[in-house]
Amino acid sequence: MIVSLYVDDIIITGNNTQLIEKFKEDMKLEFEMTDLGLLNYFLGMEVIQDDHGIFLSQEKYACKLLEKFGMKNCKSVSTPLTPHGNNHENDEEYDEATKYRSIIGGLLYLCASRPDLMFASSYLSRYMAAPLTKHYEEAKRVLRYVKGTSHFGVQFTSVNNPELYGYSDSDWGGSNEDKKSTSEYVFTLGSAVFCWQSSKQQTVAQSTAEAEYIAVCAAANQDIWLQRLLGEIGLDSQDGVLIFCDNKSAIVIGRNPVQHRRTKHIEIKYHFVREAEQKGLIQLKYCEGEVQLADLLTKGLGVSRFEELENLE
Image (cartoon, rainbow, N blue to C red):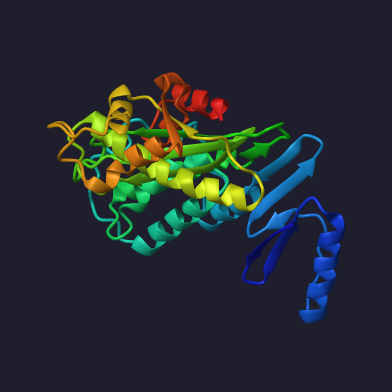
């Protein structure tokens, strides 16, 4: 039996019906509780359970977000950001910073079931302290994308022997302000992605290989935590979870314990990847860029590439 608790909301699941029923009865004796039956809504997350599997979405929340900011009847677009979305000429300071922060906060919450919004939300959140008008215009474009895709979500179907896989990617010097890169990772378990992240790196990478290596380190850290979590719920992952990377140089750095002039400047903490590889906790494997799922979280993409990666999910 697994119990998930958030303040006064509880989700209970497991493979022992009698144990679940006993737990609910015991809890009712101690607390004032209401049994709402089969899970269908939780903290803004809609859950549809049928013969096809389990579908998670936030359609109602997305519609409320659009209505809140007057975008309910806006025209939809095909992608959340354009490939060159940060090259607007309008660099004036936006005079409603609180409104901008509210939009970004809502988009970040939508990312709980929408990996396609992760990069756009993460990128725009960098400017919440002092947004410019161009950032607000980009945020409105993301809302227009949400308008046409509010029904999107994550579909989980039954899979025999589900295995954990990771995908790691990075851009290089993607930030115009400080030339820092962005790390991204995506993890799949069975039939769908269930974990994703996009964040700016803390240091400036001096090469694409270094940027990719730092991204692999973030994925490795998350991977080890996921292995522990899955182990607690009785799902032991295979030995050495595969992390797919589309940069061969970064994989070589992760496997080679010898320091040389090309890697000696990389901070020690990132060489945790080598230790994880040697211990068999992870396995770095090369994949072609065309099937790199994490590319969806690295930058603004064109329509064809964006839709191609959405279908891969």
